[in-house]
Length: 321
Image (cartoon, rainbow, N blue to C red; front, side):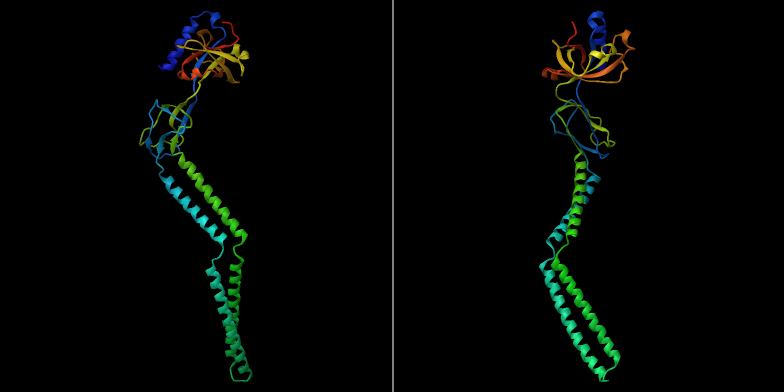
């Protein structure tokens, strides 16, 4: 039988041996601490375990690590996409290079010179045709060459004008949005990858390590179970006759087996729904009665030294002894 259950049952029998008057106003339960379950991010194998069951750990301490596996490839891909987006934005913000503008100017001058040459040649052939010294087909061919040169000149002029105008604001905005999207995707993957390293969210003590080195846990299953440090709280079941007196904010006296003196506390929470009383929470005659789950914050720092799971007896601070 579980040691905690044995202790609780023994406490109940001892309590049942007392007179009915002594029992009146007492509530039974256990001393508890926050139980933290640190779950697996993926089914990658466990490659490092740095703690053992029972170890005390500080907040932020590394407890276990899973292999990154396919996550590493996704991180590299996202980082490369971000770098491409950064280079593209920088290119657009900087605008065209001076060499590109110089090249465009030279191309425009060459096109203008070619247009002048083809135009003069067309005029010369036109004069020869009018004088019946050359056929009309030769003039048509020269007209086509002149018109082609004119089109080339317009094209080079437009390209030079585009380079001189620089990058449009819309293009820069689009590139900036693409960069932010790539950065967000990388941060998302980095956040997931960080969860492959299991760290203690609070100072506490390791209670259980369900998986061992080399095993592949299912995603979402607990890898580390720990109990948080600090002052524990009492979790008790309030019998229905005492429910109206047991309200949040009520001062409480708490007795712990094996500890001299009493602890004080304040009711933090009382369930609004009744539940069937656990077999260990009341005397044999009262097991069929309903009770309400309640949690009590303890005041004294000395309560931090009391082991988790110890049976407790709770009394209203105003109850007669």
